[in-house]
Every structure is written in C-alpha cells, then in structure tokens.
Length: 420
Image 1 (cartoon, rainbow, N blue to C red):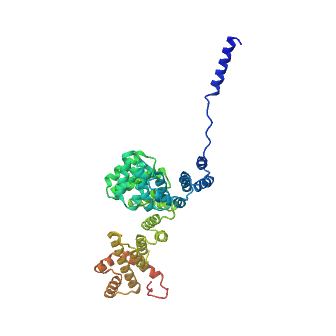
Image 2 (image 1 turned 60 degrees about the horizontal axis):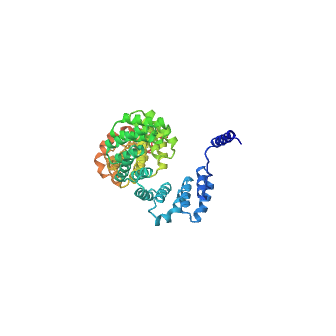
C-alpha cells in the first residue's frame, strides 16, 4: 500500500468514527425497585403497587416508602398510614419517613396526628417549604394562630417570595385581628401570584374586615375571573353584594355557589337570607330548610328560619325555630348571637299572642300581658319581660301577616276566624 493510500485509509476511518458519534456505554439494567417506580411514573399504578408490595414483603425499606407514595396517589391514604405506622414509631428521626407519614395522615383526614409529623419533618428538614405551608394551614384550621404565624414566618425567611406562605401568614394574622399586617402579606401574595385565585380570595377577606367593601368586591371579581366556579368567591361576593344593596345580583351569585357545592350549608343559608331580603319568602324558607338538613346543629340557621316565618305570617313556627336556635347555642357562642336569638324568641312569642288575640277579636290587654309574661318566663326569658310593650309596638307588620293567614283560613260561615 502506498503512503498516499495509507493516508486515505486513515482519513476514512477518522471520518467514519466522527460520523458514528461518541461511544455510548449501554445503560445499566434497572433494579426491580427502579422498574416499579418507572411503572408508577408512567401512570401504571396498579402494576407498580403490586411490584412494590412484593418488594416490601421481602424487607426492602425503600420499597415500603415508595409503596406508601403509590398508595397515596391511588387515594389509599389510610392504607399508607397502616403500612408505615409501626416503622415510624421506632424510627422518628428519618426525615423521608416523617414527611410521608405526615402527608398520609393528612390525606386520611387526621390533621391532629398529621401536624406533629409535619413538625418532625421540619425539624429534620427545615427547608421543606411545602411541609411548612401545609403545617401552617393545619394550624390555622385548628385555631393555633400563633403557631401558624411562627411556622410561616420561619419558612418565609428561607423562601421570601413564596406566595402560598404569604397567604397562609395573612390568614393567621387576620385570625389574630392584625388586619394591617394581614393586608400587607395578602398584597404580596397577589403580586407574586396574580393568577392564583386563592391569593385574591384572601385579599378580599382581609379587605372586608378592613371595611373596604369596594376593594373586596374587586378582589373577588378577579378571583372569579381566574376561576369562575370558585365556590367560596361566589358565596363571599354574593354576601358582599347583599351588603352593598344589590339583592338581585346576590341571589344570582349564591345560586351559582350552591350549584358548584350543593352540600354547603353556609351557601344555602346565605341564599336563604338573600331571598328573604328580596321578598321571596317561599324561596327563603326552602333554602334555609335545605341548609338545616345539611347542618342541623347551626343556631344561626334556625334563627333565620324564625325571622322568615315571622314575616310569612307563621309566628308559632317562629317560636319553635327560635327555641331550636337557643337549644343549639353552645358555650362558645358569642354574646351577640345569643342576644339576637333571645330577642327573636321574645318577639316571636309576643307576635304569636297578639295575632291569636286579633284573630279571636280579643281586646283584653291585661290578660295578653300576663300570658306573654308567663310564656317568656317558661322559656327562661325573664330578662325581656319589660320589653313586651315595646316589642308589641314594633311588630305591627308581622302581626298583620299572621292575622291575614288566620283570616284566610277561616270558614266563610264563621264570622270569627279560629286561632291558628
């Protein structure tokens, strides 16, 4: 071979090597655990669960954690808790284990048990911002507002531009009555995440307590522009429009809220109040009765039912509903709510007696006063006895409504309608 041909051969070999690209070593064969995780990542959860279950039975600790993750992805949080419960008892210093257990307990509907697990996770892994955020939210839900503030503030020192942490801190501060500080963090959350509906909802709730209803209205509208089916925003904007005097719009918004979340007693109650203000007594009663079926222990619902019953000419039903409202007042009920219901009960008793007397054409005022005093005494409302004359003077409309009903129920041949 000539020198020239040798050179050509070398050049050809070099060209072929260049065209073939760099040498790539074959991928190492994946372990059974990696194969199972790969199945999960491609959405084949059932197959992944079976393979991980087999590996976990063989004593593979990592497979057990991956199995728990897979169970949670399938909505089986309680099974994930059962799987890791004993292991966590004897090894609470494993950061990964603490984090998975916290999320499993949380998903299983056990927030009181999840919170300590989140605390342990953060002690072992302080930079886990999702865990800090969820812990802050749980603490707000449990009423530990100081604890929620501490967790959110600590996390914000590491992640100062995290909108969710600003929102959580705003909620905790608002619960503590620190409205200006809550507003500051709500604004930061909205600036950092202007496309996040929850940040605008929080902004609105702070603005409502700050007394700026127009700003709150604007924030809720922005929330609904992002998510037109946001049930809380629909409900809150409906209530706000009711306060601003736009009853028609309030009813429309609250109807949408009940359609989005049909089992929300709060939304049905608000719709009942809006319909009452609109003058739709039948619709108001139906909405409030539905709310009562959803939450039969809420005193405010019974109070609203009593008010509608009075305006609709059914004072005896109003007495019954007011009594139920008082029966459901817990020890934690506010003084304002308790007084409102007691005054409502007093008014219902007086209206019922006045309407009965009017239907019988009974003009014995002294006897009526005595009967009212006796009924109020029996109901434990002695403090309101001096108010009987004043209540009677202010109840003309309700008495007329009840009187109209007793007159319409009277037989044509009876000149004196019977009492209802």
